[in-house]
Length: 123
Image 1 (tube, rainbow, N blue to C red):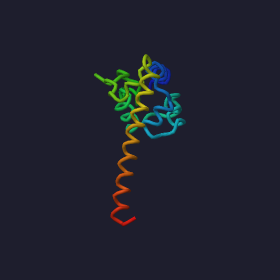
Image 2: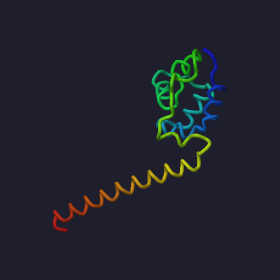
Image 3: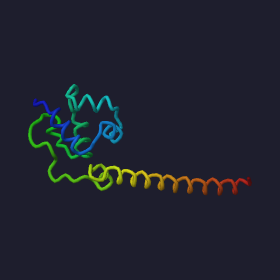
């Protein structure tokens, strides 16, 4: 099996994908991600498919080092475009603002439901 660690590291660096971001996106530890990137741990089928779906890397390449590194016709999903280096800070801040707005809307809805329940219970 070909050692892909240097190519993988350079690709992730070029795309601005930090180990912390990858770990959070996949629900794994940073140490697990680091061990995959450094080649101390090999990619299994499930893990390589997750990386293919989220980051456009070919599952076959991750497991064997053979074939093309990138999945054919991969495009970064719209919600992940903030990771592009050119607009990282600005887009990341906008994404965070949107997440806060979404959470505030949920809190507002939940507060309204609590008030309705209190009225029904006679409080």
